[in-house]
Length: 370
Image (spheres, helix red, strand yellow):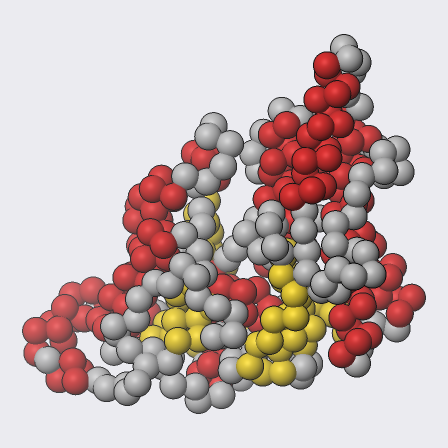
């Protein structure tokens, strides 16, 4: 870790995690997270308004905790990065507003970055600089995407995406049908280890010869599993929860890994990065490792904590923006719930520091960060 590498704070509030990370170059210094998942659990899913209010309450304490953990002062930062999209509009707005306030008060450049590109860039904190191009499979509650990134700061190309339910969303819905609670991913993963993945032949969506080779569909699978469970219950039979979990999980990870390896072969890329919350799934990791090894593809998967939403991934992409001299965002930066992955960050038209000589705000800075 070199002292001249950019020191960047990242803020992530796209869903229900208030994440604040601090990195220097590609070295992680702090990763503070405040989660409201327990609050949402009784509703069986994330409630946007509750998530936004939780972000408001957690923002400043989480930033202070990250700075303390990293052993740095806010004045030492070289930039502030924040997820500006995609995500829940209200939740994103809290993070963007906070980032703008800190950037303004500190006189630091602001970088509005893409949530999906951040999930790719976080792997640099674990395995070093990303290969160029990088092939990435991103799987979470809201996204299932295959992306080719020749330049993570400026050129991210979508090869395929979910056309209905994302993988993580399917996990949550099946967990709900099985009365396993929310979130569904971890509990299904745990139960599946004790079940038979070949017990039930659930369908593999969009795997026919005429189907889009890199797109994903899990809605049909979700419906098939739900109907199978309903039929068992209607017949008065006990539902073999562990076998259902294992067979459902196998259907999901089979499709994900099969399409990802195919994309690598078709594009001539000899490595695969997997990110997003579902990348924490143990069976996905194992099957991906097995298939990549067989195909001569190097697999890169961050540790589970870095796969779920966190501020470290945003800071990692922000640091890369600073290192490559990308144009910062304007202070007029807004939240964009549908920000396309083809926009890794939102550059400003011009970057000025007119406020640097504003006496009123200099006093505010001294009060906040002396």
